[in-house]
Amino acid sequence: MKKIDLDTYKRRGMFEAFKDREIPFLATSCMVDITSLKRFVDMQRCGFFVAISYLISKTVNRVPELRQRIINGELYEFDRVDPGFTVLLEDETFSFCDSRYFEAFAEYREYASARIRAVKACPDQSVGDKNHMFFITSAPWFSFTSIVHPYTSQYGSIPIVTIGKYFEQGGALLIPIGIQAHHGVVDGIHVGKFYGQLSAMCLEPAEWLV
Image (tube, rainbow, N blue to C red; front, side, top):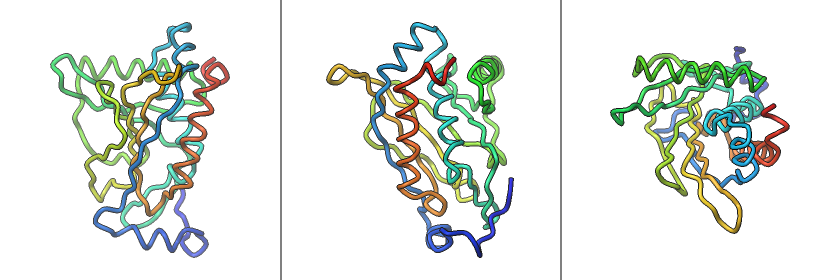
């Protein structure tokens, strides 16, 4: 983690304009074509959620602005941010699941799968300093065109990515992916980079998941 010098930070004006607003985040969603990804995952039996969460994690880490956090009013950038999941339990409640990002899918899959099994056996609803993370939540029961999450100023610069229910349209399989991020560090162009890179990875899954 490194502290960003605001004197040389090109977005200083935007950072100062949005960092103290009551509702400083931007939230949007986009349909992503997962036709090739779903076909590949089914053939390889590597698990849809683990596969798409890996691609999301890789994409988030490739966009520097999604690794930036406002901590005690100052701006920092992490070298790597790790994903945290929501995991559905048998009684229809949820557990948090802190995982870790790995460059290689095999390592990511092994670690994430073990963490998911662990919180199913021993649920975790703890909260605390998770600025080194970003969050992935799933809503596989419905598709959406917009979604907004609870906000707390202390951890408001942590991005939240939401995975919805996929559906078929025009011969393609589409899935809604929502993202909520702090406008003090993230602009629309950075969200566009996120969707662009994630979409490209979903079109060529074999390049990333082997």
